Length: 117
Image: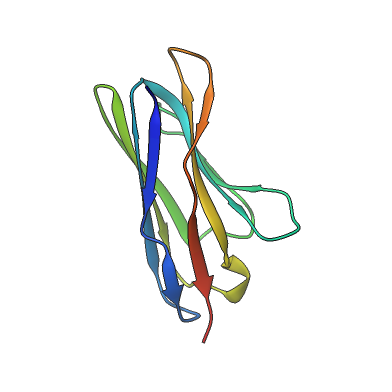
């Protein structure tokens, strides 16, 4: 059974840093990613990282956010280091992982990030 469990959200002042973590288990995962969503808007891609190490970032977070992954057998830990946070980074952040085994895409439950003074 595939599970994605996120942690690390919270309230931070502008200019601060937060680190999100996601433990994906139950499969072997190819591309992993972080998305975010604000009320009334579509979920948007923040960052992705392939199993081979290729990363991509949304223009709005380039130079501020860093995605990393640590693969172990049938689990992967996916981190998102967020620096120089801005109020517009406020959103619910979702972890996403694509399974090699099933071909399916899986989502975490989401974690709230609020950037406010």
